[in-house]
Structures are given as structure tokens and as C-alpha cells.
Image 1 (cartoon, rainbow, N blue to C red):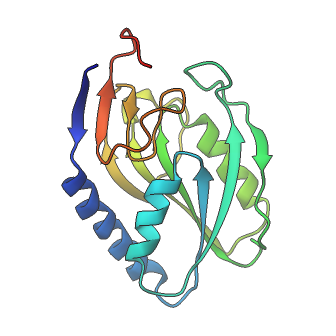
Image 2: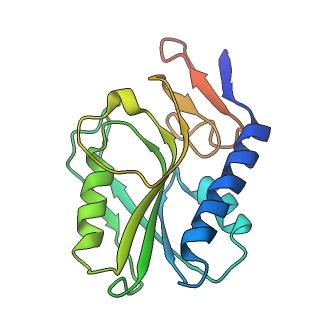
Length: 176
């Protein structure tokens, strides 16, 4: 099995600290609500909140947009909606990876309907060349090429989330 390393663990840790510093500068006295998108975003969000040494709160949501396909069609199914109050809060949506942007844009639009004071987007990986919709990203970890990526919470059929770095997976190869 060949999984080529794209981003090493050391680089990930450094960049997560930098993003946390950017967020701290913007939200230090605002007690933001970080909304993590499950499942893939949990590792990034966990590392991010460990680096945020100021008051903030955490919430999770879960949506499905891929089904059994490898590409999102932009239709989302809410599996778990936010339970915490969003109205009047500063919200940061935390996502592991964005490619077409369909799913994240729908989530952003739904969160905005709840009337937060502000709503920003933080993504760990940005597959910019795959973007199909216009969406502003406020905090970005890394811009990445159009490969299927695993590790650091990202999976292929629920495998490889445990890897500490980001790797490119060859979908032509068989994985067990």
C-alpha cells in the first residue's frame, strides 16, 4: 500500500498554532462558538481548541452530502443540527476540507439563518481548484492539489483517520 505524505505532522502542528493565533487576535474577548463538522473535522478542531487559550465554546454538527459517491452534489442531509444557541453569538465553522464548496456553503447559509453576530469559516485543507461555488474562507490551513487525501481525521471508507500526517491515496489500489 502506497500512501504518499503530502503534509508532515510537524507542519500541521505549526500551522494549527498559527491559525489559533489568528483566531485569538480576532476573538480574544468575544467567547466565540466553534462549530465543528463531524466526522473529519474532529481532529483539526481538537488541536485547534487546545491552542486557543481564551474562553470559547464548542458545538458539533453532522451532515451527509456524498452518500456513496466520491463527489458532493450539493444536497445536504442534516444528521445532527446544532443544539446550542447561535443567535447573537460569534460563530466559527470548522471544517476539515473543502473542495467544490457546495456542502460548506449550505451549512454556512443555514447557520446565518440563526442570526449570529458574525459567522466565519475555518478550513484545514482547501482544494481550491475544485471549487464550484463562491465562498469566502476566513482561516485556511493549507491549499492542496486535487488528490484524494487521508489522515489527520480524513478517511477513505472510514480508514486512515488515525494517520498523523496528510497523505495522498491512490484510489486505483485495493485497501483493506
